[in-house]
Amino acid sequence: MCIRDSIWGQFGKMDSLFNVVDTWKEKADNVIGKSLPCGHFIPEEAPEELLEEVVPFFLG
Image: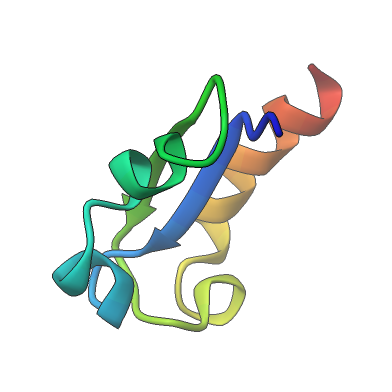
C-alpha cells in the first residue's frame, strides 16, 4: 500500500495519542503527513489551511 499524504487535526485525538506518520509507515510506503491547527472537523475548522494542502496534491 502506498499513501502519499495524510492530514489530521492537531487538537484531535490522533495527534495526542499517536505519532500518525510513524503509525502509517508500519503499513504503507512513501508516507508523509502533517497536522493542521484544528480538531476533528478539518474542512469546517481550517478550510484555508486544508486547501493549501490538498489543491497542490490534486494538481500534482
